[in-house]
Amino acid sequence: MTTAATVPAKLRVRALTHQFQPMASTEPLTVLHDVDLEIPRGAFVSIIGQSGCGKSTLLRLMAGLLTPTAGDILHDGRPVRGLDAKLGFVFQQDAVFPWLTVENNVAYGPRCRGVPAAEREALVARWCEAVGLTAFRRAYPKELSGGMRKRVDLARVYANAPDVLLMDEPFGALDVQTKATMQQTVLDLWQRTATTVAFVTHDLEEAVFLSDRVVVLSARPGRVAAIIPIDVPRPRSAETRLGDAFAAAKRAVWHAMQSAQSPPARAPVLLTQEE
Amino acid sequence: MTPQPAVELTGGASLDDAPVTRAQRKPIAAPALVFGALSLTLVVGVYWFIATRPGVNPALVPSPPRIAAELVAQITSGDLFVNAWASLRRVLIGFAIGAALAALLGSLAGWFRYWGYFLNPLIDAIRPIPALAYIPLIIVWVGIGEPSRIIIIALAVFKPCVVNARAGMQEVAQIYVDAARTLGASPVRIFTTVALPSAVPYLIAGMRTGLSTGFLALVAAELIAASSGLGFMIQNAGQYFRTDTVLVGIIAIGVVGAALDQVARRIGNRLTRWSEARR
Image (cartoon, rainbow over all chains, first blue to last red; front, side, top):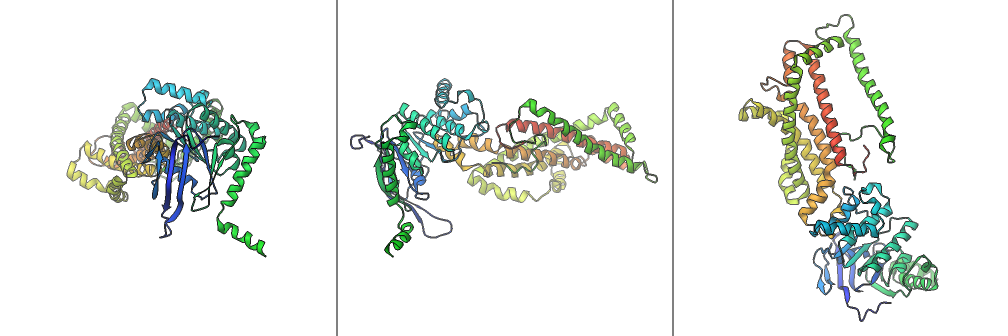
């Protein structure tokens, strides 16, 4: 388990509030309210919550894709203002450029940063290899399956050498088996690099399997309801999912998620209990 | 992101969405040829039947053999090639100017917000005006030489190209823009490496429409005191009631236009090999 007190936070969210202006209303909608969060250097932290609780918004704010209404986000102690290639992002949707081959997708970030050709080629070779796509380097994304495209996405973001990886339900659209393989790949890549990961998901098992700690967000407006440390030994494999430690961690997160549910959703249940 | 092209992108070849190899694809070309030949034969057959009815004046409705004889005469004298080349040259130059300008202005208007504010009223005002309406003005301003004819064709090509280019830029999926931004791309790089390539199917569709509207404007453009070209040939023959020559000219425009469209289609397919759209 990570000892948060001794490791300095890689990413720190301070008193963060975010509002949207819905088109059909004059009232601003508060999506996140007074969120405080620390992601230690090198940690794997999952953010979990019901749909609509603002977890994706939180991740987009961390990436600098959105600007918060109030509060701030510190990356290595400096406020995040706008985008930064050091903060890699993996989207829920298929974001691989369909007009570029696998290798050109992977080379995209380094090209933006002006990495010389020889070094770029080395990066492409390394990361295509790391995700098992060396044989498909010259293929176009349309020739690949959904899982393989996600691998391209991972290679592309890793080739850009981020020190924080923000992943927004990256495997939400994949089937169960592909998802499990991808989770293993993510853990392998994370262990091979010194990357800090913030991983948004609504999948309890996924959060527990991957993380050092799970942050549970309450329903809208989202706030931090609980932070559950995951005491499951690493390295984790398919067998990890069958162990007692895993079941216990799942139970802990499940309970936290239950009590984090919005009061209106619980109200009818309470009424019937009183009768 | 399937574009809504103004021209059909499918060649009617593949019946299956599953990827097929070249070898598997080959036999499908045979029915395409057979059915294509069938429709042409049908039209010629019906025309032939009508042309040879008693009471139909062969000078006004020449029979296919007469048209064929005229075609041979036009080819052996070399007139057909001179005229076809004169027309092709005009269309290609006009197309190059019109399409390049349209790609530039349409992309700017569709991608950059303030360029859009600036150019959209112009583009939308130009849309309903037929290129031929400019002819009197162009004659007065530029005269009756070759430049006037090229300008008219360029204007005719410009319209569909600019509208498609703008639409293509407006349809660029936000996810790719966000992905490029998080990977560290500058706004200019996003324009050149995300917006432009993802708008290519639209640009191609616009250019193919532009090519055919360019041919439409050709005949009108060659009305302006031209002494060569297929449009001139048709006009000139019409004045002498040479309906056979008129038909040879019409067929030549059809053949040249269709051939050029095939070339454009092949180039387009090559540029959009990455696209999931059927073709």
